[in-house]
Each structure stands twice: as structure tokens, then as C-alpha cells.
Length: 258
Image (cartoon, rainbow, N blue to C red):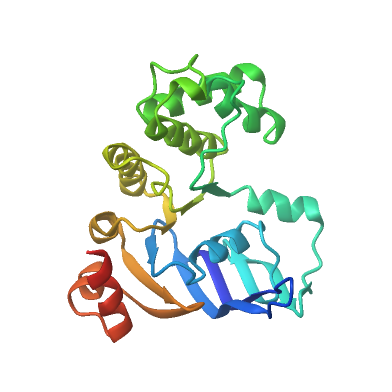
């Protein structure tokens, strides 16, 4: 069973103040198998983050199909979804998809533990006791067992991002999307977040990761996908992409970042 599949994804942003439409994604088709880790790399503006945001319904789809666990959720033409499904049923399926962003977006007036507990209580309808126990276990798993009662402002950027990862994991997703999760961190804090992500991958989590961390992509990904100007330029095993890329544009990009 594929965990995520997209067929012919297209997305255009329509400009304001006289600027014309910008085609951000052009016919993007991808299948992510269970327990597979795919790292998406490419220059800024290639459409990487938009692709993840479409999977999690944070952007609306213009054209194409999105399947989650082999269930067709979106079949869009001219922005209209032709899949007739009750929104509660669609939302239940989408809860299987967790997402971690560049920015941590933690509630500043709530402790690390409270930040992680909120969604399981309000969305998964867990009791406070169940949510607290689950959240403590997950914070310990990401190395923050001593920070339950600490507020975000008292945490480093790396610690805040680990709380954000714990918050996503508390919903027990089957798929995790990471949108450049280390890009807002100071260099010395990047490693602690990548370590948590690596342990998730080793534990069998299905992951789609937009990243500029080429070492992580090389070491952890099952496949590396290169995007350029809204399209998939190539996708292959890390050793092939980094040692023998098929496209000159990929070679140029890797030379610029390595």
C-alpha cells in the first residue's frame, strides 16, 4: 500500500498589482511507499514547500489527484474537487499526516507539555490523563524529558523545534511531512533536530522531507527527489543523485550547496 500518491499535481498562484499568474507546480506525480523516507531538494522557488502544503490541505489544489493510504481524497479540475466525501471522513484520513514547519508556532503561554497535549485532547478526544501520559513519553523520546514545565521562551530554537515534532507525533500520524525544519535554527542546533528525525526514520516512519541539509538527505533518505521550476527534475537513490546526477541542473545545484 502506498502511503502518499499524487498524480498530475498543478498549482498556480495568481499575482496581485498587475503581476501575472505564477505556475508553482506543474504535473507533479509521486508515490511514497510505507516506511519510505524521501528528501526533496532543489533551489528556492522550486515548489517544494507548496507541494507539502497541498498534501496537508494548507493550500488548495488546482489540478490533479491526491491519495492518502490508497484513498482518493482530491481529484481536482479547475480548482473543483470531484471526490464526494464528507468533510469529517476526509479530515479523519488527513489526521494520519503530521507536519513540522520552519517556524515552531508554539503557544508561548503554554509549557512544552501543554503544547504537546492540546491536539490529542481537542482533536483526538483523549482524556487529559491519557494525553499527558502520551505527551510525556513523546517528549522523552525527543530528548526533552526534563523540559515538561518549561515555556517556549526558555527553550533554545532546537528544543522548540523538537517540541514541535513531539506535538505532531502526539497525534500518532502514519506519515510525517517536514518543511525545512532546520532552516530557522542556528547551525550548532541543527544536529539535535536532525538526530530526532533520523531516529524516526530508523523506527519506520514514512517521511517526506523538504531540506537543505544534504548530509541528512545522503545518509537517511531512501530516495532523493530534485525539484526545479515546479517540476520533478529527477529522483533516485542518494548515492546516484549525489555522485551521478542525470541532469546538468542538478549538478549545478549540488555544486552551489555542497
